[in-house]
Image 1 (cartoon, helix red, strand yellow):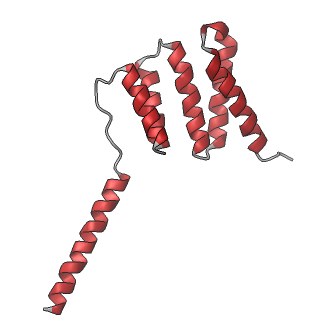
Image 2 (cartoon, one colour):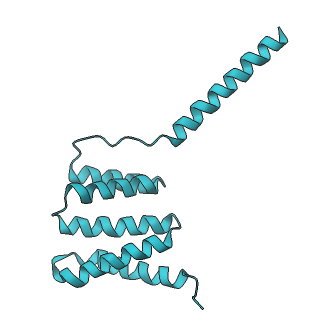
Image 3 (cartoon, helix red, strand yellow):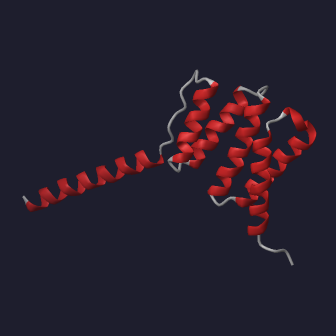
Length: 134
């Protein structure tokens, strides 16, 4: 009887662990048909929860679905770079910031100024934190 109880308890614990791991590692699916505002809101909500990868996924989705919206594309580009920085992937963040600033150099006044200002500040922070090359 004791052995049977142990086996049942062990099986229950194993099932709980498997269920927990599958919930933790499963990525949420992104619903079809989301509008621009909803994609941006979901990206921000994910970032606020600390789910930076999902935030990047939503911002990238926005850029893919609405490639002609230069204003929001600039914001999405900045946010993606910033989220990589928050994830500790500063080399990637710096590359993306430089790409965004290059876009500003090409398009100038057609883009909103705020993402450029924030990108400049982030670039300064990233360069200051980068290991010095000898």
